[in-house]
Image (cartoon, rainbow, N blue to C red; front, side, top):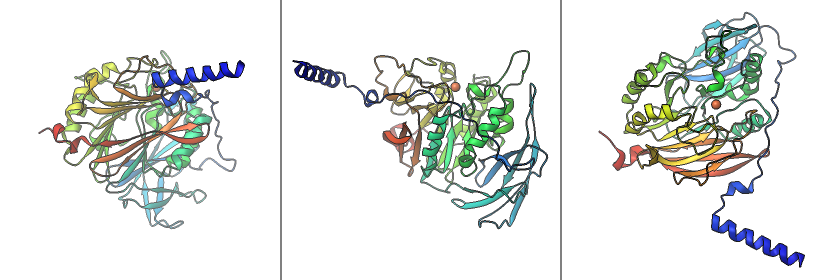
Length: 431
Ligand SMILES: [Fe+2]
């Protein structure tokens, strides 16, 4: 009888599964969070050894190189297109910050260029002969590939995600907030800088802030975003913004406009950010451009975690993004993956943005496993697993979005969908 009973049970389960349309995510056993890694300074490093090197885009053909040294050192970058040969050199500045009892090293900031597109450059920071690095500039036209990963942290899962991102062949990384999870423990910012350096020194990393970047302590540390603004300077002034907390940039010769918004600074209609966004979107040529927006707290979210936290910002700004025909909105904050259909004003809308939550980079807090039940129709795919996304914009009309789950340490493509630009949809073209 036992085998028959168990066969019947299996049959019953299979029948229920078919009737309930169980999504593929339920077949995956979710792993626990992994421990925070500690990435020490190299043993042979001294006071002037460049460390925590990362690069970001500045305008159409320049790159900002940012790095730290423990002590005073030259803020210079030597660079060229052959290893060991540096016909070009640029100088910048250095700064430091203090946070309670912590004093940072020297944070160097040098903008280099003009640079050729889609070209491998070799460089050294502070004329330090011991550390040659290299990066590739993005292409001047489509196609272009973005890696997108939020709430990255610095755990064993972060490492797994970074390994997968590294092998993706991406041109530019977009991070929708929550970088180091230092959470006021400043040396963790240094450790994070060392962990991400192999990737962040070789491709532009464009970030915006999350709640873990605020690091304000009542009565003790009153300046928010102290470490974030000092260490992760973005090209806000190049886009007319007055704040490092929101900015925009163009890539692929202006074929893609990316708006990096700030969820933790003013966003209401009388705020500087709002006024800046109106002007920024007005400048976009929608006849030729994909528009991507990035926030931290998701505006659309069917996870029980952080429910409703993005709604005030959505109430203030969604209309602007809709009128500008923004194609995709990426968010982080919720430690899971979720993709919506095109939406506007809480409903499906063919001229609205595809909203994607990608807060699953690998932080120490673990996954947000509880979703609202039943799954609303506008939510097309959701799963609580660590991973990263890739947005490959192929031409003016088509882009391929894929989500890559960390299946233990293997990379598994779990969600893949073609996106069509709103600028190619006559029904969505506005005058
Ligand atoms: Fe967050």
